Picture 1 (cartoon, rainbow over the protein chains, first blue to last red):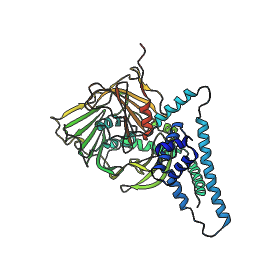
Picture 2 (picture 1 turned 60 degrees about the vertical axis):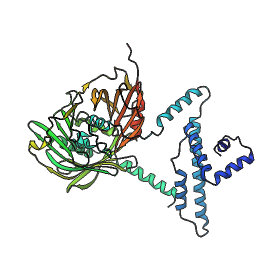
Picture 3 (picture 1 turned 120 degrees about the vertical axis):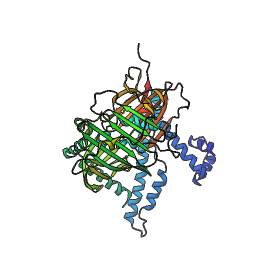
Picture 4 (picture 1 turned 120 degrees about the horizontal axis):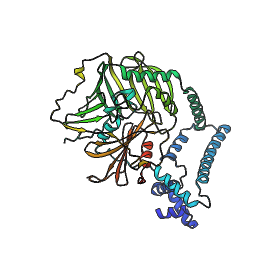
Length: 170
Length: 326
């Protein structure tokens, strides 16, 4: 299914297969997740503004929390529709501006792509690792140069890494 | 309220807050008062350090008299530790490991160890990167306090709320806030008393004759001249000092410190030769401190700073080695 969704995004499926793939996404589960992940990847590669994880879920939640129209009050219903439509339009606009801003210009395209890729590598979310074994030594070495000491005296020196087994005996 | 109206209202609120946050001479005055109290007061107290779910209680004692100042912190929870500062030396006593770690001031330009970067005249320069404003009155450890808020002008540094004793100016509570305004780290006195204590009480309680001494042996160094630098600096962070030193058991380690006047970031550079463990590239967090490790030109680069993860990572990623021109 992953391959099919990739082909769908690239417009390589015929009408029937495309309909099947779209239907699969519509049913949720892995297919939908793949669809989202692939879009996130492609956004990342183009440096389009990436929405935070769970954005669609939170938006749906906020919309669901909006007051439900029980009586057929025209004006209210209209304004709500307008809001949803305009929200969709502004997301589209953000996407378009993002795309135009970062679209490679003819002529110096490779350099620009390289630049965008460099930015991407730098801004990539870091891999989380446990503090290095010498973390407390680095903290002690660093602390004396922190101007905070000017306001707080020695208090910041208590910052340390506490391991579950406490500090190893040497 | 519709989402649209909520957004509009919060935009209005933000605009209002921005106006209220213009620099006030009173707020800068309070920062100077805190700074002076930190240097001039003799006191004893108990404070709690919190980050996330972790909290640790410590005793702090400081004495200023004709023969200079001396300060001692004893950590009461977890691994026992005592940190004593005299003149230009900080000693960290670790009774379980029977080790004393010694940090000596590398040069004598500063007046006192630990206070090299923020001189009173530089306090107003903080306004370049932070909005400094007076907050409400509050109470900490039974004492009336004035709050001072430092709100960063960008997302490269953390915000701070400082609670200063109305009477003495002593900092009784300090909160570090992230971009969302959530407290990520806090120091808070639970008990505080001004007044001199006998000098004996500021010495270590341990007999340390048989302990191993790990002296940092810090000396000023020219790491830029040796080829180390940043390909791009982090806005507002300037190089404060460059040293050669030992860190724990590691041999010669280069340390370059960058600071915006309040937050500091250290870059440690050590050769990979002789290292047992491979370098694990990545980020670790301890409260408001982030540590980012990576390998550059057969060296392990460890960046440590009380700044948002992205700032620490940006400095780490900018570290480069260029072979010096002969």
